[in-house]
Structure formats: structure tokens, C-alpha cells
Amino acid sequence: MNNTEITGPDKLWNRNFFIQWQGQMVSRLGTQAFIIGQLFFIKQETGSATLLGLLAMLSSLPGLIMGPVGGVLADRFSRKLIIILSDFIRGVSLLVLCAALIFMADNRNFVLLVMFFVSILNSIITPIFSSSIQSTIPDLVPQEKVTSANSIAQLSVQITVFFGQMLGGTLYRIFGPLTLFFVDALSFFYSSASEVLVDIPPTKSKEPIQWKGIFNTFWQDLVEGWKYVIDRPGLKEAILASALLAFFSTPIIILLPFYVEDFLKVKIDWYGYFLAFTGLGAILGYILAGTLRLRGKQKSNVLIGFMFVNSIGYGILGFIHNPYLAVFVAFIAGIATGFITVHITSIIQQSTPTEIRGRVLGLLGALSGSLTPLAMGLSGIIADLLDQNLTLIYVGCGIIMTVLILGFAFKKDFRMFLSFTPELKKLVGS
Image 1 (cartoon, rainbow, N blue to C red):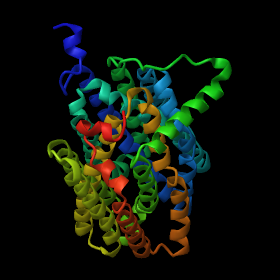
Image 2: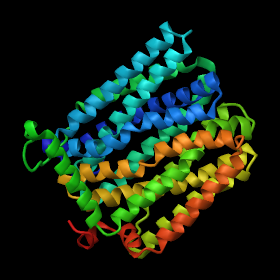
Image 3: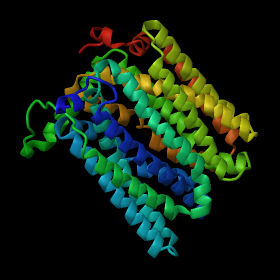
Image 4: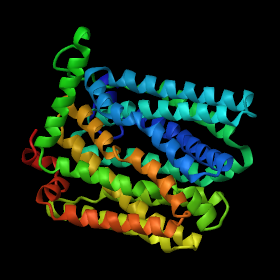
């Protein structure tokens, strides 16, 4: 078998896509361990919802800048090199955190400072990494298989969420944060090594960067990405909707440790179960997105319907005190989330030329998450001011998200964007 047969995007499960997929799956499993270890370490060491929210907010701010920059880098430089270095650097940073926990365990403030540094570094690297990894998918698989590829990629995310977070709370209780952080470091090193074996086509940059005018070059590329988004009917509405919905869904996630222990009054193990079944639902959503063949108006209506299900599910959680029922609602919301994520990501990838794809995806990530740090900071503050009245917070966020979706559903450009298929590419430009 020659190299073209191995690496050519003539089928979905080719060599390059498989290697990249399995490497990312391993690193994502490690990331789930880190997320749980970080959340419960901060909660148990400080007991403050305000501090938890502020730390999440401040560690996320760099991502607002690096989202668009990451898109420019993905379009200008080797996406393969960016992916490899991103995972390697994140692995090293986690080893530093492990060292702090071993040698400075009695100095809680120092350990929290190092954890804060690792979170900031991850916030800087992740948007750069994500722009590159998402930009490679249409180049690694046949065009008509992009939605299926995204379904599989997101499926791996939720498989790791299911197993990592289902067991994460229990593993944290048994082994503590050090083990979870070390596992995450190893997972990044494995992923980085795997990505060396992936053949990723080089980007087709218009011209090489002139280093003396590096700032102007980056600025021009950013402006070009912005102009593309603004000129595409429905795309800007979709990004605005993502940003607003991300803002009002953030308190649900940030306050989840308090929801589990203080509202549901169950062990921290249930935090893992809660997120795991949300992930299990998302897995089903990814499978549905990759197998159901929806076209035109039908596709748009189904996506909007799932958006309503997701938002209403968040609000209902504020009334539920039974952990089993809460897990079931999370499962249903997860199905909606998975289905929506695959389709919107695929629409953007398929409708955007490869030479600007990184910038558009970078802008999507930055704008969708632009309000998230503010929501993180406000979540903890408002929760403490309201004496951690999670019913009021959860129900309020659910109602607001439902109203927002209703407003966007009446916009013609938004519905046209959601109904896009590769066969109708001329409708959105190429």
C-alpha cells in the first residue's frame, strides 16, 4: 500500500485521522482528571464560591485574546507543529504543579498560585491548539464526511467525560489531586508524541510573514477574519447566539460542585456521575448528528428545537432535589448539546475556505467565550450574595436562555445558516 492510499482523504477512517483522534482522546481523558481535581481542591481548601468563580474568570481572560491570534497562527504556520508543541507545553506545566503539591504541600497559597498559573497557561494555549486541530479535520477526511468526523471527534470528548468524570470524584476522594494532575501530564505527553505521526497538509498562506511588520500582518489577518464573519449572512448571528448562551450557561457549570454537595446533599462522587451522564447524553447526540441526514428547513427546525430542550433542561435543574432525576435531566440536555455542537462546527468548517478557516474558528471560539470569564466571576459573587440560592440562579439562567433562542429563531439569516449543507455552499459564499 503506498503513502497516498494510507493518508489520502478518500475514506473517513484513514491513518491520519485515526492517529489524531486516539491521541486527542487520551489527552482529553487526562484533562477531565485535572478539571475535577482543580474544582474540588479549591472548594475544599477555601469553601468560597466567590474565589472559585474569580479564579475561573481570571484564568480564562487570556483566551479572549488568544482565540483570534490562534486562528491567525493556524492559517500562517504549521498546524502540526502548533498541535504538538501545545500538548507538550501543557504536559510540562502540569508536572510543575505536581512538584508544587509534593514539595510545598503545607503552603496552600503557593499551591493555589501555581494552579492559577497552570490554568492561565492552559487558557493561552487551548484556543491556539483548538483553532489548529479543528482546521485540520476537513483536510484529513473526505468533504462529505466532515460532519461524521466531527461527530466522532466530539464522541471521543464525551466518552472521556463519561469515564473520566464518572470516576473522577471517586478517584479524587481515594487518591487526591496529585494523582489526577500527574495522569493529565502523562496524557498530554502521549498525545504530543502521537501527533508527530500525523501527516497534515501545509496551510496555503497568501505570503510569508515579514517579521519586521509582524504586528501589522497579524492585524490585517484578524481584520480579514472579522470581515469574512460579518459578510456571511447568519454566521454573525450564530456567533452572537453562542456568546450569549455561553454566558448564561456558565453559572450552571461553575456552581455545580455546590449544587451537588449543598443542594442535592450527596457525596462528591455524584459530581462525576452528573457530568458523566451529561456526557453520555452528548455521545448519543453526536451519534444522532453523524447518522441522521437532515436537509434545509428540517435541519434548521431540529437544531432550534434541541436548543430549546437544552435551555429548558438547565432551568428545570433548579427545582430538582432528587439526584437521580437531576442526572436524567442532565442526560437529556447532553443529547441536545452534542447534536447542536456537531452540526454548527461542521457548517462552519464546510462553508469556510481552508486559507481562512483557522481565523474564523478562532473568532468563533473567542466570541463564543468572550462573556464567559465575566460570567465566571459574577457566578460566585452572585451566589454568595444570594446566600447560594441555586434555585433562583438556575431557573433564572434557563428562562433567559429560552427567551434568547426564541428571539434568534425568528431571524431568517440565522435559520438559513442552520440549514446549510455542502450542496448549498453557493448560498453562503465560498
